Structures are given as structure tokens and as C-alpha cells.
Image (cartoon, rainbow, N blue to C red):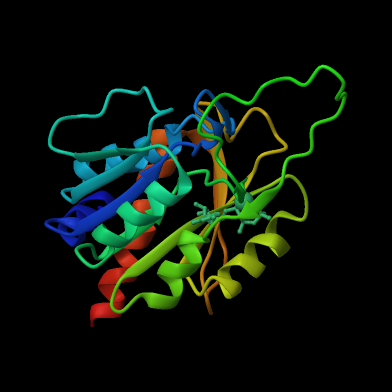
Length: 229
Ligand code: CTP
Ligand code: CA
């Protein structure tokens, strides 16, 4: 019965999902990246489509998973490309889920030609500058939209996730313990806790990412339906 309800609520709803890890270039051939596989974001996109939603997926170049037809896909590489695309799509969607692992810092400069190794230099210092926090931008600029982010943590999971919920002014944080290698990043399994303002936390027990995605979307569907009444 819950699935049927979620289908009815998500039918025709436009959902924007980001997936994968960004790359920040030092020069034409080198970048700083992360271990995100994009599996959770892609699972959310697939399940959202199965529940009747109109899905736009902004994925990074690192994501190699097959995406079902019917999902509108945009591919980006860097955080600034991702930020630009998300802002273009933001107003056209009712629900936005930032599942991408976004770099927090990028090299201050991107060399035009390959950086050369210096014969008498044993250390290389890199200067990094903070990237834009895309989720915080969405949280602070949303109108009717329901904005969802993830919190990847290795320690103090709930405290850190709660701080992100408040600071980024979002409607939901999906808290993910990435210290447990059985779940999170490259795994096919996940276990998460959903945090929302002024609501009790919802714990989703370890399951495959498709099942976790469906459960997350059901909670979002029921919540956004309530908001409308
Ligand atoms: N996020 C984002 N833009 C960034 C960094 C993160 O939109 N520049 C989003 C992620 O997609 C995720 C959420 O913010 O939905 C939380 O990301 P996370 O890395 O867990 O938290 P940060 O706020 O970056 O803080 P920290 O890495 O220090 O824990
Ligand atoms: Ca981060």
C-alpha cells in the first residue's frame, strides 16, 4: 500500500538528482577526485522513475552505470560545472536530491600546460580554494521545492548530519556512515538515517541501494504530499 501511495504522489513530479564524484583539475591531465561510485544517486533516479516521477539526472563523468531510457541525463565533470547545471535545472523541479560527492576544495589555478617535475624540488605545495556549497545554495534559495542532501561521515554521524540540516537549510539530510566499508561509497548496500527539521529521525536498516532508494523516495513522497495540504 505504501508503494501505491508513493506512486500516486510522485506521478508527474519532476525530480532532479545528482550522482557521482567531481574532479578538480590541476593541469590538463591531472585532477583531484574521490571514491564515489554514483550507485546511490543512480538507484534514486531509477526508483524515482519507477514510482512515476519525471527524472533529470546530473551525473559526473566518473559514473559508468547504465541509465534507463526516459531519464534525462546531463554529464558534468567539475564542481563548477555541476553547480552551473544544477542552478539551471533547479527552478524546473519540485524535488532535488544532491547525492553527488562534491569536492570541497579545488586547485586555485589550473595550469594550461602539464606541470613539470622540478629537478631540485622535493616538495610541491598545492593551494586549494573552497568550492561553492551547491546544497547550501539550494537550501537558501528554494521556494516550494523539497531539497535533500546527504551527509557522509566517519564519526559523530547524527551530530554532523544535524548540523548540515540546519546550516544548509534543507528539508532532509540522509546520513551515511562511510567508516563502515560494507555500506556507502562503492558498496551495493547501504544503511541510512533520515533527518528532517522538527521530525523524529527515521532509520533505514541495511539493504541494497535500490531498496534504500525506494524507502527514501516513499518518505519524501508522503512528506511533500502533506506539505501541499
Ligand atoms: N555538497 C554540495 N556542494 C559542496 C559540498 C557538498 O552540494 N561543495 C553537498 C553534497 O552533495 C551532500 C551534502 O552537501 O548532499 C553534504 O556533503 P558532505 O561532504 O557530507 O558535507 P560538507 O558540507 O561538504 O562538509 P564535510 O565534507 O566537511 O563533512
Ligand atoms: Ca564535503
